[in-house]
Amino acid sequence: KGGEIGWVSVSPDADNEHLDLILPEEARNEALGISSKPGDIVMAQSERGYHLVQIVDVMVDVRKMAMTRSRDRNKKKKKTDGAKGDEVKKLGILGGAILAEQNGVEFKRDLIYKVETMGCQMNIADSERMEGQLQSLGIRPIDEVKDKGRKVDLVVLNTCSIRDHAEQKVYSYIGPYAKRKREGEDVTIVVAGCVAQQEGEALLRRAPEVDLVMGPQYANRLGDLLEDVANGNQVVATEASHIMEDSTKPRRQSSTAAWVNVIYGCNERCTYCIVPTTRGVEQSRPVEIIVQEVTELVSQGYKEVTLLGQNIDAHRRQ
Image (tube, rainbow, N blue to C red):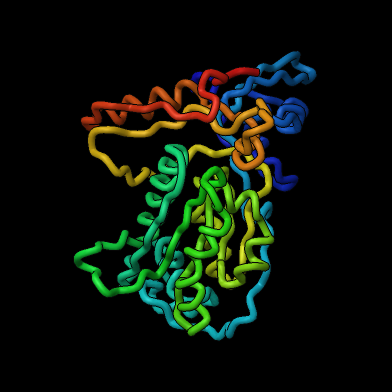
């Protein structure tokens, strides 16, 4: 349809034969072998001639890229609410929520989360996307009135490297949640953002109670990484990665003003700036995807849209 091929797998046992008449195997392999990101157009050659292929999206198994470390926990099988009575190996209430979502059933336990955001508008937009993923798992945000006196089941700290004493503030914030975990409570601790990217595995050595350390480029993949956490692992996801389009709707803080990412990262390497180190290289979103998101926001009644990027005038710069 209109030249659209669909998803093509790089797995050697993938069944891609139905694509042979459109894009022969040798051209597919060449196109997939070229390092590319969404929006790029690559040229591949086959016995039929030259083929121009536009990359619409890239799907990466982030769990294979992330560093995981098993926790020394009791791995007895448990009955889990909403799992149709199946015995599962996933650990704790987070595992139950993820399993229920995968099975398409309601998770009966009322789980609540809290997201603390430091720093720039990019972090605010990342937090909105992460909240959307948490809510898709059936975990709701804490209500300061309704849930007064109740402790959260999952906390996300979205960090910023620019603020003064950024690392010290992160460890100070983690403290009360780490104490709860040491006392045997089932709480999931996630550290995201630029300090997480900067510290990486060192953060786990200093705060071993943390379950997940993830850089900004993984904000769209929180649900996938939490599945590894639910399997009893500590996870560090800071490797350079393509930023995928997220089908989960962000939980926007405003009903009239919205953030829309245009470009991620920066290539400038200014001596005073840490952004290229923590946010990675420039990755532009395709124009048609941006227009589609803004059009949808307008149809929902939004009056103001702010286009975000560390170096926004570099959009689509090759």
